[in-house]
Length: 471
Ligand code: HEM
Image (tube, rainbow, N blue to C red):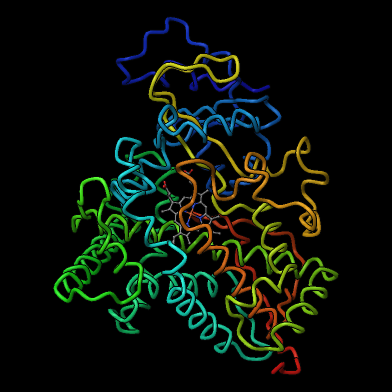
């Protein structure tokens, strides 16, 4: 196996005064091959993250990779992965992903340290209570309807781009409802997409490159400032108005900590706005892009899905009440999230010396885990790379919390899980009920360099499906 000498444990300990391990156990963890001087595995990760991840389990339950300036212990073993995710105090948010996310979302719910998390979660949770969902679902169906009506028969669409525009629109609409004009919503959605893409690039590249005054870096900084200013002005307006508009922002403005009655400050609210956009839009777009891509390559499943949506919807837009009658739609989403979990890797930082497996990890060690790697393990799944939605026919994914983790696990698990599942199911059923999407070529895919890896530039031809309307 090729050694990467620059991945020595001394680098892991750098800057951590609590470390007191003479010859660290970390040297026993094999380095992943292919790291380059200075940039480590960053370029590989940017070019094709999923290919890099697929190769890592070969090196044992843990191996070392280098991302930007950080050396990271990558954990592939399912039991060790759930051990890391379940203990959010010992394995706190940290590492390259969260360092970059914090630049944008500050101490928002997804990036704040454990010490601030429980208060934040208590304040955010009411926004996701089931009684607040109906207006969000209305926003979803409006944007889905706008997207499917915007296509015309025979049109060639860039799938990822169209779906990303749709989910950013849903995120903007559910957050701000009518506070923004159509033009502002479009600008805001484009800006957020620029930030989401820039964030991933900045995670993989050394910080010094991110600080250079390149056109990309300047655009990223200017966009971030513009979005923060817009969010601040809407928050100021809405504080003055004091009216519950039923959107996410209203729920966050009203939230009051049951322990001490405290509310979010303006700057905390801006952080939450960023958090929900970054966590909620690209993830759902990524899931939908992969689902439609997989259906195009699995005609038997596509055919069965068409029969299901035709019999339930007859060409109309799906509503939340339809979802229990669309079991195959839900299985397709479950299986897509297994094969291509949008959050393909997360990082943590060890807060006290500890042992993981039989390895001593000093405080300060950066750790990464990957839902993608767990979901592709042949120790867990039969035919792990096959698209087989019916594997979920008699198995509830929610009973497999250790082996099926697209939404993470434990206290830091996804707060928007229900929201995301409803959104993807409504969109998938409505889109496939009206349109057949087929790729003109079956060329092998490349991956695009984004927060959520999606098939790059997948052009799909949309063709109207003739469906008898059901009353
Ligand atoms: C298919 C859709 C989605 C997927 C696959 C997904 C996945 C995840 C995962 C894996 C985590 C845990 C990250 C970690 O452990 O570091 C997470 C956390 C989070 N997600 Fe999602 N997510 C989705 C949709 C959403 C939506 C729609 C929202 C908001 C509207 C959202 C908001 C969040 C937030 C705020 C967190 C941080 C929770 C905390 O730390 O307490 N997500 N998500």
